Image (cartoon, rainbow, N blue to C red):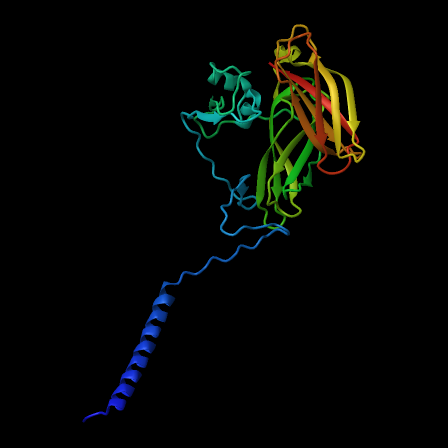
Length: 337
């Protein structure tokens, strides 16, 4: 059968149309099979929290997701603890580094005999020994801290979205206490999940009859209306042989509180109390309180140079409120040999 030229062209057009339909259908199937489901934008659990999709989450502090009263596995201590290293950071001192790593100042000095405590530089590497008494047994007793009066912890929201937490502790013993370690715990009232953060003391020890603050900062995000508690871990009797060399006298205090009550300027003089004292660095802690005796600010001054007996150090510092008006500022001091 012979087809005319027009009939042939019509058949060819229909065949091309059918071919295009099949080709389009095949590509659609291919693209559908290769498609990857997109990640959904995360939704914040906290009001006002800003979430950046695909950002790496930094867990600080550690979150314990174990429900309350759940059994905790006991890990056997290492038979031969391996020392660690630590990179010195800005404003680090020997005692601060020791505190951060859960060891005593003497242990840190003994592990780094060639390091001058007064010549630390940023980036310097220190050897961090395992704490003494790390036993090769699972039943090693935990030392019981000397009793301290612990007042109710209080937390104040920070502009960053985190929390500032404070608690006052009082030494009612007849001797000085040092090596004080503790941690704040925030408990989620919904799930029982707990976040912990190490509590810091502005000085290395607390003398009899004195009240000092422990403090910590929890970075965001934090729980809504969390339960706040403090767990005291260690409080050791201070070596009384060294007591005299660490006493500091603070004179000529002049404290000017700003009109809005949100800051204060402190000017004073400090000196070693004993003529028999060894030269050392002076630490002065300034603690700001509101009219209800709640802590609303902490600042510490460290003398830039070693102070010798008979020398007087004049210092000035600014302290700022994290919330509320400053009613008074108390000063506490000690010397670090």
